[in-house]
Length: 292
Image 1: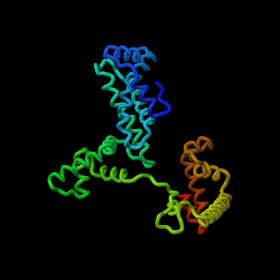
Image 2 (image 1 turned 120 degrees about the vertical axis):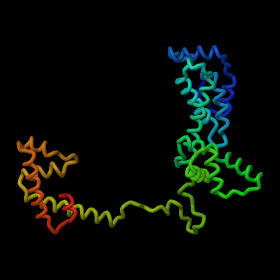
Image 3 (image 1 turned 45 degrees about the vertical axis):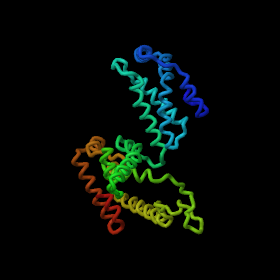
Image 4 (image 1 turned 180 degrees about the vertical axis):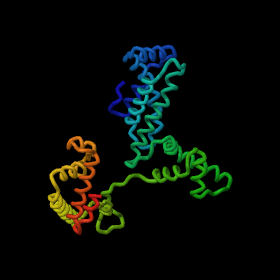
């Protein structure tokens, strides 16, 4: 059965026309797919249980997702179940497939609920799909007892009922309390029609800062080139390889190339840095940091 039908009505109708499998036929198809990767058996198994996928998908329509999308996610979960099903365990395929179908639908709903990631842990999923129901139940029970629960008490009872930390309840309540808004929407209280995006602070460097940064960088580069001129060719080579490369070379590597001991290379490096410090004295603290 194709999972990309054109309308919400076609997919359910096609699913309801599929055959019903008895336990023996289901087992034979599962073995054929597992042992021989027989695609015809796989397709027959999936088609027979698409009605289960459609039924489960319909329970999540209240979350605002298109029915076709929900059915497709349910179908993907069904195919994962078929691929991982082990007929030797003595469990009906429908029983095994329910978990995979439900997981696929719930992941899709949570991914598309908000541009801000709603969560993916088992605690967050449990809260997302049960918070309102549990909240309503607790409120009804409290009302029957003549009690009035404040917000904190209600959240604490929800956390206890669902078996999750209170912080998770508070986070999920905030996520579910409102929907996404466009940053291009006009602020209601702003007479000039300013959009919300205009209130976001630009954390990039401003023009004056960029000019100053470029000026300072050029000055530092000039001072460094001038200071390097007081070094010998070998000292410049060691400083360049030790400080100016993306991947600094070790004293041992340089000693092998220059036919010097590791200790001798270290001494030349120290002497070169001393010369550079003297040449750069009173010019730039930043370059002193470079030579540290």
